[in-house]
Image 1 (tube, rainbow, N blue to C red):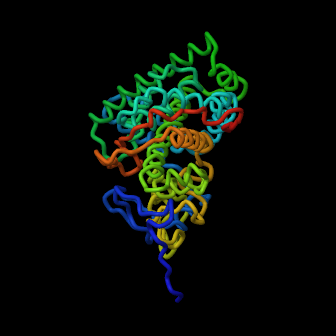
Image 2 (image 1 turned 135 degrees about the horizontal axis):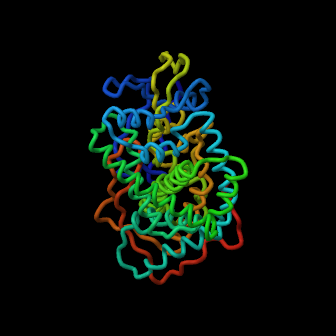
Length: 417
């Protein structure tokens, strides 16, 4: 065995052990979780295998919620329809039809997702922060920028999208097992309000035009989804386009400006911005665990064979810290050679919004580097204790009031599709 070489943690810009990160699982063999009756995968090879596995299906747990409602004499229709619109919970053939419509629909909205459009949203988000006083960066930038981008692309009011996101976060959490009936009752009320708001926006677009009109015409030409299914697909687009992007943006700000010398190295090109963001996704993936998959045939993951019918959950965060694939995984090293990322899923359920999320992160960081962002030492960054999402709750900082806030990228088109 060769001598292990330990890289210095603080002597090269960009390499350190990020502080304040919440605990995570270590990578190891597949483990059985008796309380939840699921298998948990934590090694990189096992998670990558699950994403490639052909004989699996998504756990369509919204059908179970519908069954709970029937047994209890309750109508959870709006909640079930919105959850059914989230593509990562769907199986063929419905999954393929909805995904194809959404992919082609994104092309009709490409102007709203271009570099010029996103750059304009970055300017809007940064403009009120020029006073030089401390700012809560998660709310002001990480949460707000994706909302602005999505609102302008869809032709919605920013407040409408912000409300959909705030209410929708609870609905997405409905995949947790064993919720009491009162929780489902509350989620149904939230879902009914969201569904009504989305249907009203669809009616307005059909009547008055706007960015959604070509998307609706596309549905009439081929996909033929119902209005409720289109509303569910839009809910999926809003949540997928904002929730994980906000997590990426907050982590990127912390890791870019929270280590000595790293912002300067990013500014002068010593650390490539794309390599930096890839390492952010490895170190702090916005989606820590992927939704459950049911095995349709027995499968062996390393030394463990799991029976057909079992539900398997992939812990992306643990897998991306697997020392067998990423030596010294707790070091944040933008120059490391990385295995293919797992942070946005893979296979038929791979996230369609990866280019948009990376574009928003690149343009925001480029603007913040020019604007001289400095993080505040107190209060320290605070993370939400959530098993599935990596969410930074609080991050304080201030911009240099003497620095200009330029247009991040001018004349460059970067489309999502």
